Length: 52
Ligand SMILES: [Zn+2]
Image (cartoon, rainbow, N blue to C red; front, side):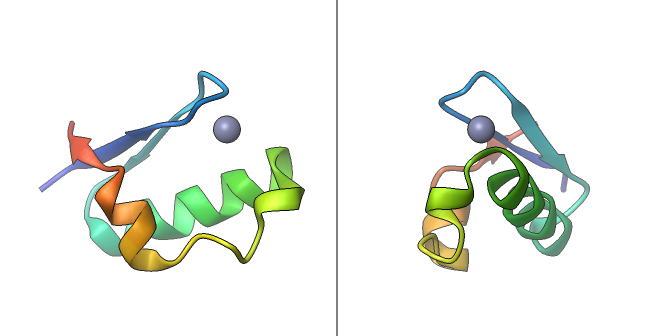
């Protein structure tokens, strides 16, 4: 089931499943929010996710 996270910066992270969504979100955080890198757990990222 596809999921997405609407980041506070306006970027929409998408993934075909939870694993892909978390991987894409971690990539986005490292690239655009390096100060947040490593602070968001998988569970926290998934808590922000909505059905795409
Ligand atoms: Zn962002």
